[in-house]
Image (cartoon, rainbow, N blue to C red; front, side):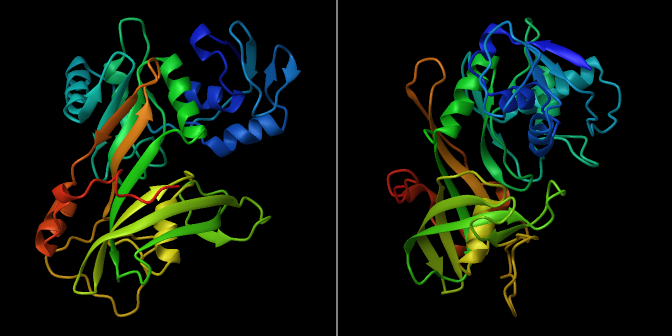
Length: 329
């Protein structure tokens, strides 16, 4: 057992988000289980997942088994290398937050067999006050692009609230198989894990009321197409479910090129010169600043494998504004 004290900059945080912020390697499903089973106490009382915390509250947490991979001992040289690498990814930074250009193939958090990940690398940027930058949201390992990092607990709580209230506007770009008959549309389904206990399980389209099913809503627009074989789609997710865009693209019959989980098109051949890597980019995000409330608007460049495909197909990334021209929720 351990007892945590709620800090002033954690005021107003939900109990489940508080645990996620304090224990980034703890799966969110485990957080929900701990709270649902009453294993956690706030000032000696059982808590609900959406209960809000106030400074000075005492949170008693049961013993936690964190599947944290064994890492080689950290050295000053490694800390310096990690800090330099993270800094090389920064698209935007101020005293409260950073937005990184996460590369393809770099995991956001640790897991089974994953030693190098953004959350671990951020430890190298721990400030003099002991505060380590925190993840605010997640991207799949093979999704490149805009990843928001909070530099203080207060910023983390405020930015997380922006995501929950859908005040953050997110645009993704993808290369997909085939050309949608409807150039601009809306995908609304329920999604549930095929294997509920597997953190990285494939998502399936489910029915309302199915166990573990959550509503997922995505808007899409076709920007360009090549030879009626490939499409450049712009996605605007309204909700933020696991693998949402990948599952929705497959659901409408136009899976994302290079997707090992959801790509299933009969007699499909990858065009020459296009790499078999996930062609999905978190292209642009606009989110209220955690302190001033003014919009922070950042775009990420195409990762190398997508830039290669865009050049090959004659797509012009510079001519399209992914916020102005994206369909509205």
